[in-house]
Length: 386
Image 1 (cartoon, rainbow, N blue to C red):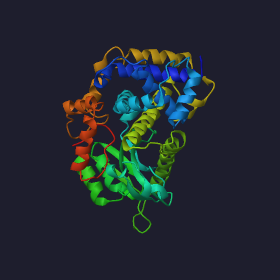
Image 2: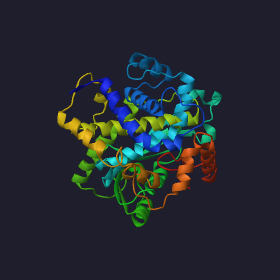
Image 3: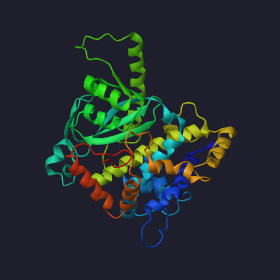
Image 4: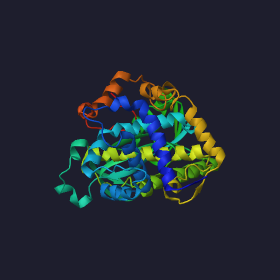
């Protein structure tokens, strides 16, 4: 069969709706049932992120041309409010899809960071946003030789290009400290990092406590011989992480901020990271060997799909966890992170955080966590961590 943008929209909606039906109880709210469902809004947001429709006006205007797919288009204010209330749903859907993919079980990964500026440098003194209340700071980006005001998004990515975990931290926090905190939530990994993650002390602690082997190339002034094969491996890994970074920056515009508040920024980040994961998942279902080629899904006018791939999707939908057996897929994510953590997760507390996000309790819990951590890193990945 031949697919186009309409078929891509259908794929995204079916995946989102199948999963959201199993977690919808976490996001129920009082009042009459809306004209357009939460599944529609989440699917539209993910599709818009894949197309690079980063501003709400552009997003809503483009969907006006696709009323055959989504007949009920919300107003801009209602869309913003609903999407923010569903902020954690995007991340939970991403986690559930991670649980479904075998490539998420890779025991090798790479860690890196991306700048997320929130206000242009010269506009910071007159900024009226709540950025400083949520830890936005000035920080240097050595790779671009510039200083930004905002945050850095720290990513843990498999060698195949799948984003496993992430954390948002103030721009002045070092990659080493935030990366160490992020890796402490995982076990049994071989992680590659650039020179910013060089620390024998941290590496030894990660190996001793988490069974994580952190490997980096030495600095020029370090007298340590590295085999040629290892340098070639690092170069190949660097190319992979650059591919993912370019996708997030150029296709998903993750370094361009149109949000006016911290929570608006969080919602956009959750949406874009979920969109990246869903795109890889669709490529896997379609049987595409180069599943990291995700731009063609949303932009190609003619994408050939074999009948065997389509049959594979039907078979996948019948597997436990999507429609047939919710406990096979959704429940493990409600009780643990996508990767095994060394600390037990408070299932009741996590559920309360999800249920409470629509009435302000999640925000209050986040502020308490933020204050308790001494205004350090902002936790953005799986569950709120104590």
